[in-house]
Length: 87
Image (cartoon, rainbow, N blue to C red; front, side, top):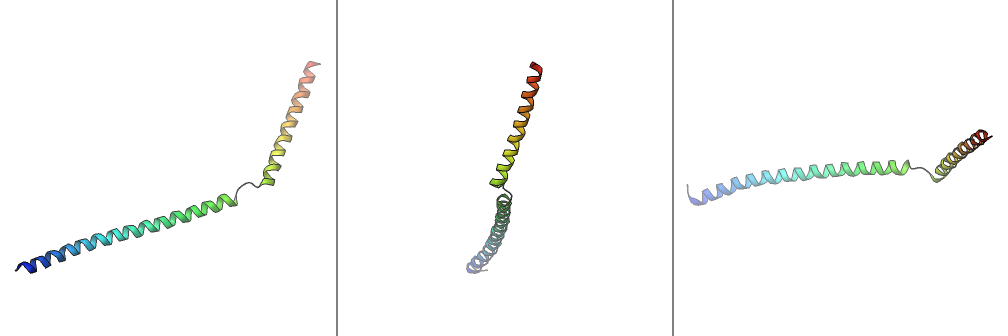
């Protein structure tokens, strides 16, 4: 076997090994891109849920006014009870 054939055979084997490595890296990158796409889709879904389910201003105002009315009623009941004790 002459030296030219040995070099070509060695380079062929090296090329085969490197192509296997490059293909594995390429598939890893593709899997990473797929995972990234899935993550972005999940983020978009969460954004839609957050935007779609937030408390509207009118509803918030109505809820807080109802809470304050209830608190005022409790305060009035406590004052009337305290006034009865003092009599």
